[in-house]
Length: 123
Figure (cartoon, rainbow, N blue to C red):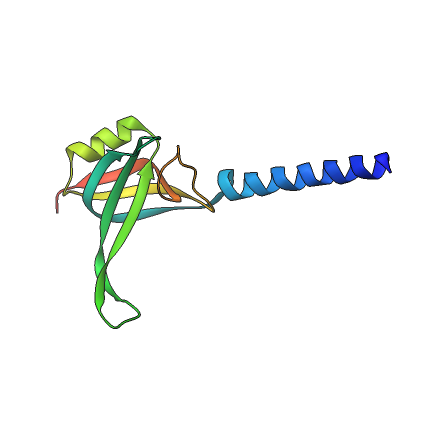
């Protein structure tokens, strides 16, 4: 009985470890988003994180029939990148990001984490 309990415990620990890794640390996708930087803020109650929003070109339809602009809400993990965004609000940026399945409170409020600025230009 002790052997079965030990094997079950090892399998459970292995399953939880794989689940946590895939949910919070495995990079699901990478890509580039372009648009006008709407805002960049440093916020949070317990964990202060860098957050921003990019307004992309074009409009989409919501389910209720009204129009909505394309917005890309993201978090930034590097303070140097954040300060460059903060100083250039209103400019057009090409941002490289990583997408995770889940978010961690110390990583940001979004599953999209911007890790570099590829280009910046005036409108």
